Image (tube, rainbow, N blue to C red; front, side):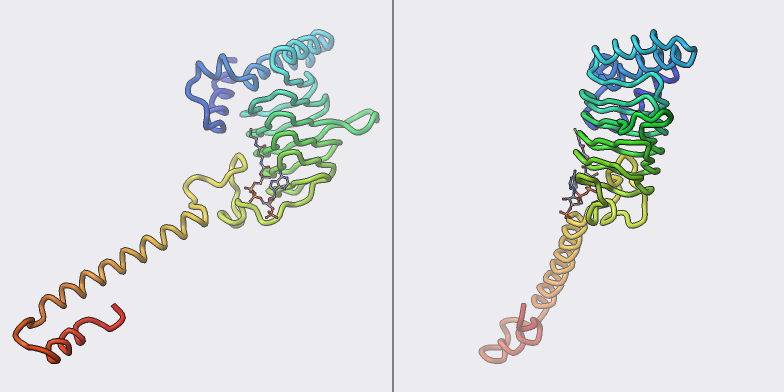
Length: 245
Ligand SMILES: CC(C)(COP(=O)(O)OP(=O)(O)OC[C@H]1O[C@@H](n2cnc3c(N)ncnc32)[C@H](O)[C@@H]1OP(=O)(O)O)[C@@H](O)C(=O)NCCC(=O)NCCS
């Protein structure tokens, strides 16, 4: 149990830049609290204590504003940031390293028995307010934009936005990490964004120009100076310094 608690805390450290300490997570993170209720409720549910499981889930909802059905299946390193308004249905299946923001629904669209809720594979990120509906699969590493409504399967690594969700135009991930996978939906910090790369290029160019100017100044000061008068002196300078400098 303590190993799971530590893992859940580590997930917060990996994905919320605002977090400062484990004590803060312990007292101030509803996404962390609700997992305590969920794990106990899920244990009861699997041991056929269904009503008790539902009741524990309901207590978790009252305490955190996050509703996770105890029958849902959730992998490791799961993180719900902010949390209020999240609803996770009974037959939802969630892989490892998945991140949800507030207002996300993993919901059903049918009364038909069997699997009614989505499956999220590993490393999926679902933006605030997104609704993922039906027994669809959001494949590994996919990202769902804030407020999207997803009604169809999502391919691995895709970024879906809008209502109904469609692939986003070229995203920051594609611009900075072509073909690569960016954990947690953001380009990794060691990859410079295009603006930083342009600024770095300009700074390098400035350095080269400064060196050239210094070299030209040195060459100019080595020329025989005041010994030649008038036009001859101008000619000498003209040889040393290119006309456009
Ligand atoms: C979908 C998402 C992951 C894409 O991020 P990104 O890779 O940085 O993508 P970009 O911002 O470069 O956007 C790519 C395109 O998708 C569009 N887009 C991005 N997010 C969108 C959204 N939620 N809804 C509609 N369109 C969206 C952009 O306008 C852009 O289209 P354009 O080039 O035609 O203008 C991100 O925008 C998002 O919604 N993340 C969820 C964040 C969240 O919920 N935060 C809550 C914190 S409390």
